[in-house]
Image 1 (cartoon, one colour):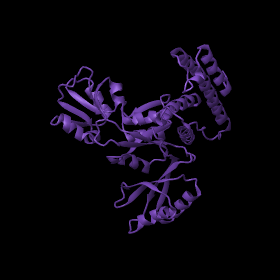
Image 2: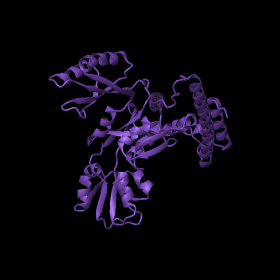
Image 3: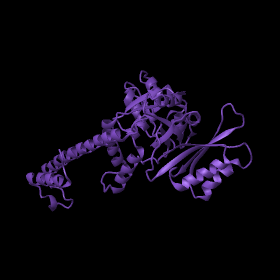
Image 4: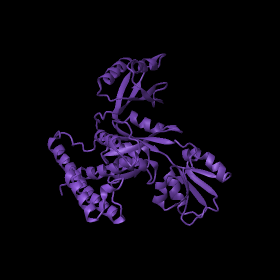
Length: 393
């Protein structure tokens, strides 16, 4: 079905007439009767269906063109995070309401996910088990039409992508209250993978019990150590004295509690749904602005989106002023650093590498100039990738 804007408007107008609705007579331009409004909704739904199928046909055509024009020595790249970021940013800016910006982002993320699945079904590895915040981050970025695969450790996520067992991986890298995830940084030191995108996810903890538990008797509270720390105030106020047990993940806590009638778990609401738990309280975290940043890892070089971030790994000589000489070009060129972390090099005593994030794309001339200057004063500079800044969810 091919529908132009004119035909969409015509169909909606016809629905108004058929319903006997005055349409323009109402202050909001909508029919005055329930039947009239429902007829308008039906016509709009028909129009949306036609336009969605037109978009899907365009996505299929994009896939055909990519296959035909791809380098014979390399597989075509179907997932373009920079293009998705441009689409979502534009739609948020153009959105007149009453839908909120986050609602528009979620709706179109699923439309994009569905269309991309027609071009190339994607498989995404994430730090499991099912029900973790990392799974939520993966679905937030890739939508529910992507196939997700839980693995046991951050190392396994990297290995799954490196071995081409999956297309991309999602790993946590830092939390606004607990700090950096050092193991993710360590994995980058010995991996050829790059950062393709970032996800910032608001973290809201829920207090949950098994379906048969009314919450009257709680003899143990189970969760990840970070989550227990992030909810300490709420736990002290409501369950002071109840033993708290830390496990490998919030999702694992939910799984363990599912078969018990005397224990509770702290996890995300996705874990409650996944393991059939009953949520007794939501948003129990002490810090209301708690967020975790995740990275999408893969092999590709991502083009500029217009609002980007770059991550680099820098090793320096162990001497006074070494870090200053690395950072000075950024200050001189007016480039904002968003994060800097230090990690020791395994097997090399007193040798360190710096992980630096900054605004901009490595294809920009000024970023290229800064990196050239940094390479002159550092032992090694390795780009971990330029990628779109996280879209507000």
